[in-house]
Image (cartoon, rainbow, N blue to C red; front, side, top):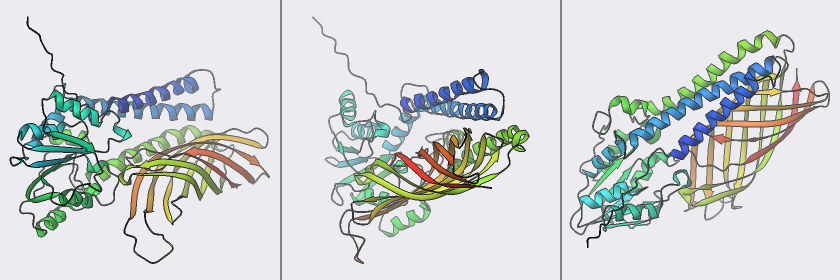
Length: 466
């Protein structure tokens, strides 16, 4: 009697998770539904408000639909089961540079689903590969258990996986004969990713090999040619920046449309352009529709507001949970277009204190504001959205205090820019025709890859009309 044993297949997941695609698709469908409800149905009478809502939701639906299509194309290109299999091509390409001595040991930083660590272990069966990752919420489908299951499915026993932090590796100097990483460091919020590379190279033995694949653009890493010279000055014999967008891992066209190019400032420009195009398109579409009613009520208003709110979030790079009440100040300036629509700008600064020793997380942001409002006697409810950019600045001291002039050994200063969408609702009460008391709530939603405390903020202030 023969017994057939079916071998389990490895599951390396996808670098563009389905959850992200479905979430974006859901947003596009929701905007399309709101477009039909407010713009096509007879729920609202013809006028400025209907035109504005119809246009806003249609533009958002189109933008999100295009983003969904782009994400789906990325998913298809990366898939291990698809025709392109770019992920496998990249893994195989990086592995080709890794040769460990018999009995040697290699480290893969940010191992994800274990693909690169397992491939290196298969290539070097008489050595050991260690894979570390923090397995954060943004890639919830990756886990330590998944890595171990994939190693078992591949029949690899010379691998070991554990949780770790790329910013502070829990290994002594010169521990490994080789260190590897694949598309990891550009995802870590940092002003100095070259320092992260140095931390990785710290655990590499003299004479060892490193193969690190990432998006080495100037925006994310600074001047990498200068960094190469620094490494050579430190005694590294051979350091080379290899362009993999010339057909080695992908074609130049693939690198461009996928946003994976690492040439010069390409990424900085590509992040800014879509935001600029969306804002300009928004203005070009909205303003003509509202100009015919602007004569009814042309006026400005503006004022100052204080705000507070409970914020919370994990700063995984420092293993710190940030939470508490934030306090801040800012202002708004708006121009009325018609009887129900306003266009303008706003900006705020908000400080969240930490650990009672002078540590803080300070967020400053500003952008283009558009909102709709309705008049009910002295009461004026409104709802709107702000699109713009900002910066999160953090000073965290895990020892000592900011009250003295002593250098603190365990202190971290970090600045990170971000783009955001900020929906808000509120109400104004007319104390006089020119002075309004304002109360509103909002939630700052970063669209950049950044870790920062999040939550609802409440605003109170005065707006003066002219």
